[in-house]
Length: 167
Length: 439
Image (cartoon, rainbow over all chains, first blue to last red; front, side, top):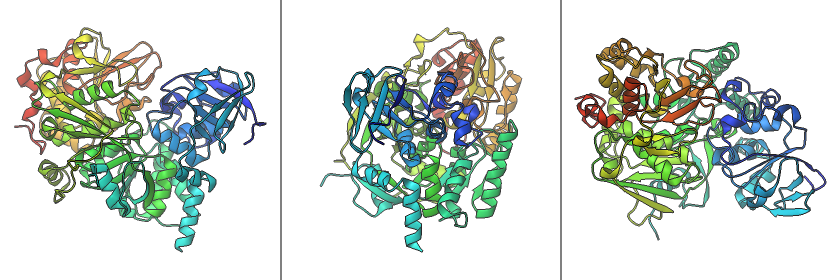
């Protein structure tokens, strides 16, 4: 993903839990697109219709707290979200997002980014770029173990390779 | 060399490495669990990584329950149940039926968890197993589906925050009140990526069913796990509940020189019953600050407080009384075994006579979709673990969290009430023995 790939920021606050990302009544499906139609259904009903492929979710502290339901990051993938940038993440959501290949960045400065701002993210370099204000926010780098996992394409390719080498 | 926390010891044992907080290890897991909500996605991942022709690494250690939509509340939920049933039968995994109970209670009753085990579940409250001295943690479906295939998973070894409670707890104060206070003090994200380790004389005096409450809600402060040092009570409980004969390894305890990120200390005598106000578990206050709040629905159940001893507390308060006229009481046992015990001991009869709705075992209203969902404007008090916006139904509803004793007092008065104001002999939980028999 390069800085040329920009999208609009959908701005959320602190402590957005997984119930808010995808309410429980929609968890009867495992289909990303169907889940994507209900992302933030109750918290921000205009999200699913308004989001465009390549947009970003920008949030405050503790994004994705609560349930282990992988349907939460999967619904964002299904909605076409290109990445999630937050001041901090809950543990299971962060791990699930990486496992799904949904780019996530921990970026303390993004509290200043407003709704609708045109932004880009660079996961390799670890920064968020605000095109409207011409400001760059540095993200926390991924630990080397996680970076290796991401470079390999996520946990599923990693596991496939492990299973093949065990044969 | 500094000593180790219980978490570091378990992850060292399971990874074969000298694991210290901050390390990344690959560890063998002892048991894995998923349910009707996260199960189908887990199955998709397993079939993807194995190309559809693989085997479970350890089918005897894989457990499926049907608890969130139990019984099925719609066609899609019913189809998901069938996906789970067919997969478990084909691959030889353990599968439990609707109303057998909530995954965490089933895992414990059926003997899948022993002290020192490493257990993962595609449910965030898999932290519950820490009450038995196991390292239990919630993971997503990709983590679990790959572990189905390999029997292993990677872990970042977490730092540990220790909570120490000394002395006796006052009557009317339970483990639920302790954990709400801890979450209030540490904050909703205060233990993110960390283990909460609970110790001190008040914790070792707790019966196991109460220790499970402490561990269950570790995730409500962001915790990866919540763990209590196992002891002879643990062994007795497992023998009685699950027919397990486990020895307690004296080394399965934190070293005196273990390194903690923080230590919180409490005097048991200073603690009061706690209520977490809407809409975050960290909004814990002394019950007195909420007394008099009108309540439309009281819900007793969930993987936090749906055990026999919890329901017994409520029955003892309500026996011969009536639930307040403008309030509904919904009781949902955590498992079929809990239901049967309520039946055999007269607890079910006492509650139904008092006007309660008694449902078959499962997650009940805590999943927010059926069997007690809240409408617009409804205000509830629940023994559950979460009170997020819309958690039990409408986004316009609100949920207070409290102990079963607080729930019982509230059901009696129709408004939040202080359980210490009710004759304490009626629900003296401290007289409940480890083996679940009320003396």
